[in-house]
Image 1 (spheres, rainbow, N blue to C red):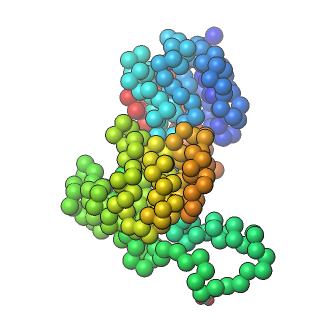
Image 2: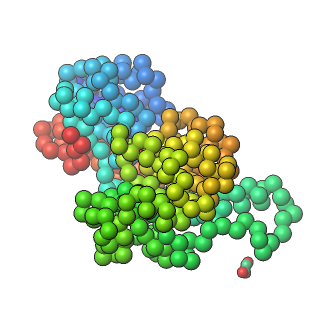
Image 3: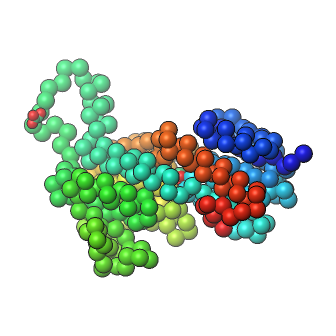
Length: 321
Ligand code: GLV
Ligand code: GLV
């Protein structure tokens, strides 16, 4: 029989139909992430793995999968869960899903920015605990985004640019960290000014993080970076938890050295650092940046299409290696 396709977690119906349409045997896990032992066992003999960010794909996994494995297709744009050099060394292609989740992730970044700036979740909690509330001229005052606030975008890739478009619609001034196409000191046609990170942090009323997690970006927003931000500033992270030093963030919030923060991603997911749970003025969501119904279908379909291309001996649409 042909080597199977392994899908460790059930994807959306549309994506699962596409998996079965590949015409190979399919091995699937359930809704929840498989235990490590089950992951390694079920990968054995697979030709393709269509996985998610919760599966750690390392040398041990590749070894367990065995020589039939030709492609690991991540249903995510980020691929810090995959040891890409180890895959490359074994001739295994790695693919991801860029482009299809930019809008959804940028939408969530704006939702978190608005929620943190205008104290939406705090207001919700306030109301539920207080049936006899009354409107107040100084109640729950927050940061005005539309009164000339500057948004600093750390990582001006596809998602960062989608956030910039949304921020401009809210009359915000946009600055961003430099890219290959946008050197430090330049300004693009949309009015985004490119500044080194230190200056961006000092100038921004809100900062939104959109870089991948790599050795270079781990802990990028540390105590020193947070100290550069104005005391009223809002920090939003929808990228990866490891980019922000969570201990330093909790301390800054407790000390009143940071206005507010909103996190969709956490270092050591699914665990949430208890220091964050106790921190004031912090909005949290459970890694739902790409969790739009349409977006999740598109991610799953692209991940399956990437795997299918490699199995046919063709170049995938979104290769990583
Ligand atoms: C989700 O976290 C992704 O990287 O797509
Ligand atoms: C507030 O409720 C206002 O009407 O300005």
